Image (cartoon, rainbow, N blue to C red):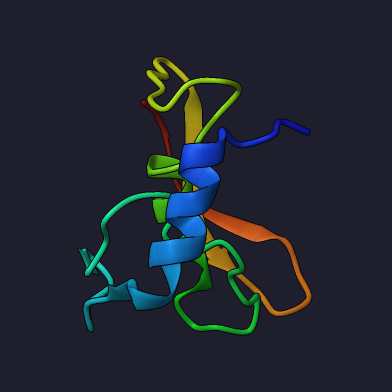
Length: 92
């Protein structure tokens, strides 16, 4: 568990309630600072998108930016109670 710096935590508490996703889920509206969606609900249809924005704008292991290269990624459908059906596998 990594504690957030005080400024990041305070920004999350102050601004997270105003952050919304656009209808297509591609961008955030009203984001200022901190983690945009600190408590995403797994039942929210936009849950995965919010998790990804949290990752992109998150505070990771003492860094506020991260550079990841050459890692595997899969895309596909996930059944309600089943495994991921891989449609594409690629290297990022």
